[in-house]
Length: 476
Image (cartoon, rainbow, N blue to C red; front, side, top):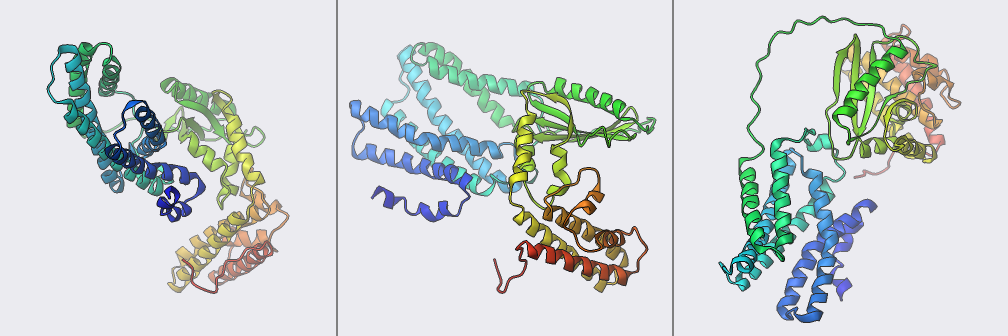
């Protein structure tokens, strides 16, 4: 009967991917188990030893739901997207209701034990605590389910998560107040008078900080003319790495406990010894810390800093899609500037997963992308937009090269011309690509014919691998 009662969950959980089944099931179980416990207590009062055992297992059964609730809340904690704001505010109300009931219980108990002052009957306090807890469990479980099914796979840019900032004095006061509330709960049994002394100012501080928000809005700064000298320099590899180490040392000094690794991607002495005017640094930080990318001129060199959360860069490194031929080498070849606890073993392992993965889906994705570019190319032709046709031809050539790379399970190491070394490729592949990319003089009709020829040959190669891009019936 118990299994039949939860049978309605089957279609909900069956539509989820495997990683989401447990979070969603735990989220839905929280309000169900909470309501079931209170109903059972109304039918059979849970008193004595047996009652205490049942209450213990009841609380234990709700733990997965509370855990997924907190993990779900961290997903949207810093999000500013309007679609997330309502759910986040509802969850804050739920936390507030629970905190109010919990606070009343602590205060009444502490006053009674420490000063023999009873401001509310305990049956009223217990009923209030039960009601606020049940309300919190229902609100939290529903919101947690909504978060995991809708936003758990959405990137932080879409959710508009705030960039990480250094801890302020307000943050320290807020953390101190929370610590005070936890201390008052611990001291309730042994030092009830101290509980009152700590609880009242700590709770008042939390309420005040919540009411005033995160502080005043930033005041716009008046723009002033800048007089600085702008000079480029052609910098050799050794000097570039010296400048990169300076930047890396500054990053590690500013975020000592949050940086896992810093490296210069695709830096190979065999191909990187020529002078350049820029240097790129990839910085891996711990999950949950979103930092804004930085770019600036330093010593005549254009410095670009890309910040990656650990889960993000490892996810990209182990993903085999149509972009894989262009970016996977960024995770394989590097000059290490800083590393903590042999972190690059994780990155190497993640990149190696794509070497063993089946490329079929990526090949199909690249084939469809090539066909999309061809369709847009003909749309531009019909609109007599010659400039757009020329641009679209170059984009079509890049999609065709990505497809050829994937058909051979190879990726770009030195430059895009690596694709012409692949074993499986269309006839006259280089000549057609040079023509599409404008490297040889061609008329618009010649470009369109070259696109058709290249597309037909690439389709034949994909179909030989069992790739189908057509459908006889409409599909959702």
